[in-house]
Image (cartoon, rainbow, N blue to C red; front, side, top):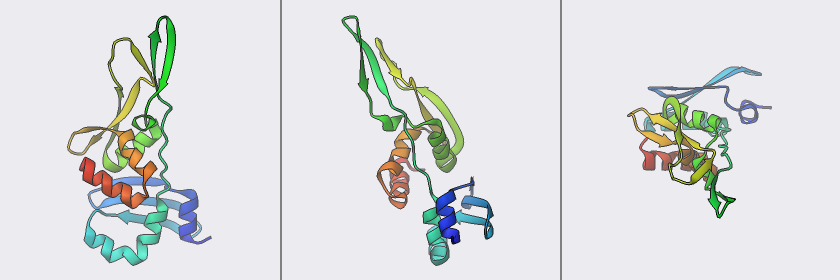
Length: 163
């Protein structure tokens, strides 16, 4: 197994967001410790494209998970359950991954909706706080990873959410 295959198989051990970019660390690989730095600067990508490109692409084993979501209400004394779009309801670990990558690492449970006579399962969504103080639904950001390859997802996220 080569380093790229090992990273693909075992995923990210630690991810830290710094001013220089995202540092991913892999401890105890058969080739020693591996550190990969991702930067938002085009100069960095061009400079290291040949060396790091295979590792950066394979290092992201992130696969978002979403909770089953439903709205529950009463119709003539009978409880009715209707599914909701699950992508707004990222699970806690997905929300934390998004917050660490695109925000300040803080996630907050926020009531999904306040509607008289309706209840929601789960009742909350996970929001994260961006570095400029905005609160964004982590599930909506994570959905880009569920529907696209990593590079496309990150490009769209930067474009639409400005993070």
